[in-house]
Length: 341
Length: 257
Ligand SMILES: Nc1ncnc2c1ncn2[C@@H]1O[C@H](COP(=O)(O)OP(=O)(O)OP(=O)(O)O)[C@@H](O)[C@H]1O
Ligand SMILES: [Mg+2]
Image (cartoon, rainbow over all chains, first blue to last red):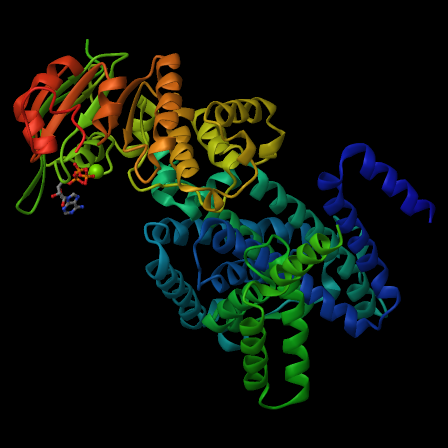
């Protein structure tokens, strides 16, 4: 009660528009932080996956929602992050998760800078096809160089050997996996919150406004002096880095990286979760990613024909909610507040 | 030194001579009207000078420098801005964000990725001032796509103006606007442009407007310059009257049919 009063005081003194999102975000973060003590570990793992994919979708949507470029190849950057981590752990014997993050980010940056440089020369369908084609090149390389990548077997990354926060948290000894799941959830939650704040600042920065201008009207953007191609490229690299970070975080939880995450259906999943949540809204990709993760998990668990079930459910959802879950919710909320005031 | 000089400028589309050997010199501070019948090549001339299209041949000299091969953004940075005959805005951004973006870009601030755009009080103040000058202050937070045609035209001009160019091309800033609003829009544009000492080339069909505001009138026909001169000189030019309104004789321009 006293908390609510305190919040209300803050709202009226500084202005509701600036503070309401921050208050809501903190409330959601508190709920998320409390969750592992309330639900069983399986649900914690599931939510961890959801948050990781949310980071991937946030990155993807910098291109789709804010720059107007539909990439069909984001598996490449997710995979670049994931495989770099696997290499670091296997070949360098590294244990520090932070080292993995730095390395994985560099890997994803490298690949996205390279691929992006080629792709941003085109827009619309050509852009999409190029991103798809390049990601498939990476996928086929993972097979060709099987002595490096392990081919279809992939590379194992044992979570028990990793340490978090510069060695401060380790998982040696009994109950290793349970402790890992618990600690890793908070680790991912922290990085998810950080990634979300960073992305929020980016899209509200002058740079972010320039991207939206390019999305709306590329011609006019150049006539106000914006170097369209360069800005698209930078957006591409940032987008790839976020999705790469998701790939980095995904590996220890999955315990294994395989070429599946480099394959085009995985890119399709990233597109789908973003559209499902609503690519015209900032939080849409986050909600979409978490929802998609649940939908997919339960579809897989409930039937052998899970792809069919998932496909049908998703098609119905997208047809029913063309502006996505968050877009539709926002419209309903707007109608509701207009109706009451 | 003239502000802009085009030398044997040419742009052909197949057999269409859209810009045909145009030699035009523009002095600093002039308010020039570019007139001519439909298809005369007025927009094409603006397109070539602003780098929307590259010229087939000829030179464009801006402030003594050859900018013939400069890109759109390079010419914008050099000080050439333009508006568009068909409104060209950032439709999903607010009127404020449209103008603010032009200012951010001019100031080289669009590179800034780590600060909130709306926290930049300098840009905010300037953008609001520009909106105010164009009578759009009340529409500040509306999406550009939701504005009325006249307001969209004004916002299009405001975007070019917010770049504080040395030379601005305004391609039919009052087309598609009711006659009643036309004078008001031209008044706004003329006062803003003259107030800042910006050199302006305005494409306009309404000869009343043209005679009222211009220092010099340039008449184009079939891609070439047919005549140029002060409003008084052009008013007397029978060939121009023939081409623009299909009749001649004394006072052809003031007769209303
Ligand atoms: N992109 C293009 N491709 C082919 N032809 C073009 C193109 N742009 C202009 N033209 C042609 O060039 C000629 C000049 O056109 P332009 O648009 O410059 O005329 P204008 O003087 O602006 O006419 P209006 O008053 O109708 O706007 C016309 O015959 C037009 O059809
Ligand atoms: Mg025209």
